[in-house]
Image 1 (cartoon, rainbow, N blue to C red):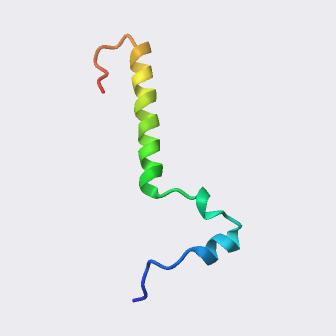
Image 2: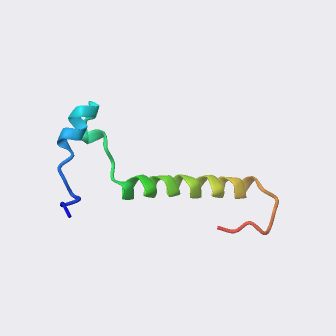
Length: 54
């Protein structure tokens, strides 16, 4: 099997994408879940329900 870690330079060029604009999946998911937790905490502050925990 070929090496799955191939340089992405050709793909970026083909798509016209600047590699500096690409984030890792780990960073994307970290930002995503940080935003979700913030929104949930904001909802908790506005909610009168007592069974909603974070």
